[in-house]
Image (cartoon, rainbow, N blue to C red; front, side, top):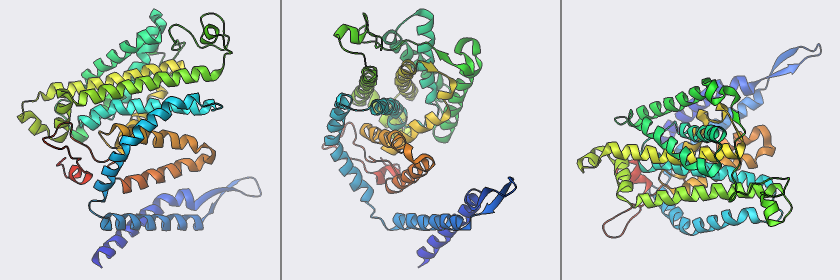
Length: 425
């Protein structure tokens, strides 16, 4: 009985704050009177429904958290991990064959390119957040460094995409190390604040250094990726993909090629990450994530471990930025705001920190669902936000909340979300 009263008080408080917040937005609206002037009318029925909805939703969330089985999250996580062994190959086969589907609109291929870009960014940030346990809110800075590195080098020295790709990654890794040195002693909220500031510094620099970056006007004229020197042009002729193979130029050819380029880069990111997890460096990242003090007591060089996590994560962020710049042909500071870092971090957290397959699922939800709901216009973000809240209530540590140690004595057992939540993971 006391628990029910506490839940009712909590739900009533949530409803009261909802009344204060929704009052001006839902309870009032602008109207036109007969004289043509604007007036204000009330809409109490909408406000009452919104407040009641918040009350009921908060009460349901509290009841779910109080009465759900203690091991439900662990059981669901283990089942999701088992299903991932079969789903991951199926998703990979689908990703490879999707652009080859006859009659597939170019919009779906373009959406696939966008999703794969965020998958690659999520896998890069997963090294820093999911494996090393370092909260990074400025990951978009490395994304921007890779994009602007390619734009400046290609337009200044006349290099192509494939020549600039490793250079962009190396420059982004260098800036990742520059970020890593000042934050060696920081963790948690303090680390998040510093990385957030770093991302804003990079954005302000590219916005105000007009002579180099073009400032708010951005840069354009970057070369497109080529297939062994063959360009993708609608004109055709010698030196083009369509002219070499004797086929009619079509827009889907360029879109499909870009899709396979980002798919290849994303798979490279995943392969390197999985290989590193089984190396001493990857095990040092996991030790750092679980307990930094214990990590130091084992003789692990915490400084080098943190720097390598920042550098390698930034390296793949630079790859993604280089591809983004080549695909768009135009970049500006507006493409590298904090919301991009927040989106990539949300993908990592929603998928389950440290889970590679979870990042893929979260990227499809975070990027694909809002694009598919374009027809709903103003309601699509409301539906999307409610869906995210429900997912995080049911799966508070992401789609795949369990993780399996890289090396274990005897049979490796998955670590459930209940243990991870208590810091015993």
